[in-house]
Length: 309
Image (tube, rainbow, N blue to C red):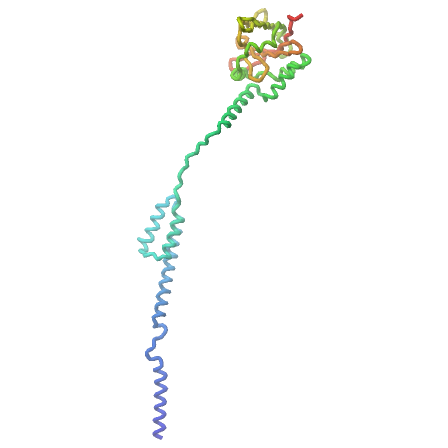
């Protein structure tokens, strides 16, 4: 019996030792270094995440409330938030976020560029001059130059007086000032087509005769030169007006490339002449230039040659 009890107590002792002594010297998982380090890292991570979220919030507040054109001021505020308010020793990851924030805030200053003066090619400059000259011609004629020349051709080749007067109406000078500014003096040799004595009348726009008109063109020789001798006169209400000259090298004005000749007839009056070569007539318009610079058409005339019969 005694032996049985001894054996029983020994067995109980062994069981107790096994139960209570099997973990002797061991630490629980919550007390291990790895567990404690993991918890410390997790806490640090949570703290860093909270700080990063706060930084981003302040970034956004600064961006929303500041004029981005004042980049230096924004950057100064950001640095104050980082260093003064938080007193942070920035980690590598946070420095990366900061560099991104700086890139968003700092903009390159806009420098006003000076306009670049383009040098025009000589050909383009010359083309502009020609274009401007053409525009001035259009101003005095109020017509296209090519169309104007075609009307002159119809006038000079008219088969009867009615057709000639119809074409003459299309070549009226609207502004004598502009015409004279664009024209040049007519060389005396140009009057070879006009040689002879012509007579006729000036009629107003209603067809009423307002004055007589005569023109005489000849050449006088002086040395080796043949120079123009002319005599143009009109009689209106018994009063004579005339324009004459001898040994003239030039007389009247003409636009280059056109056929009409304009003659100053005194007292702001002008005569526009065309020669109808096939019919030996001179046809034209009698103008007056008013004080305000406008040009008024007084009447038209057809002069017949009277010296060849």
